Length: 161
Image (cartoon, rainbow, N blue to C red):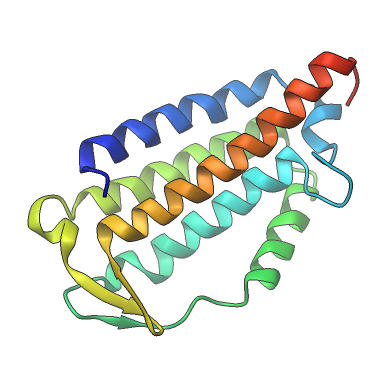
């Protein structure tokens, strides 16, 4: 189990990495990272969608022994996020929105420092603590970071998007 300080370090590092994506060309930004996969734009939009869901549907309801509604249909949330990424929003606008929404979500989590970091709640039938919930989201961040980094490394070595 990660400490709050380790989690803060992750979020600071991840924010810096997201900001580094501004260096991507627009062609790279909107190009699928692999055949049949999302683009970096769609991935960042996807992260925004789930952070916003956490802000709107989770943080205000978290308390000891709370039982929260199950997650919504993942596919519909993800489809809306992909549509949003391709709606005409620019790379800089999407990254700025990510930074704003992520900052608010992390600030909401940080209110649960100390013993509250370990209180128990359920989402549907799945047990969580604030720490385990945050760790799930950190793993999710790292999964998508690895995908985008692999795409960028491949493009660097082949010279194409």
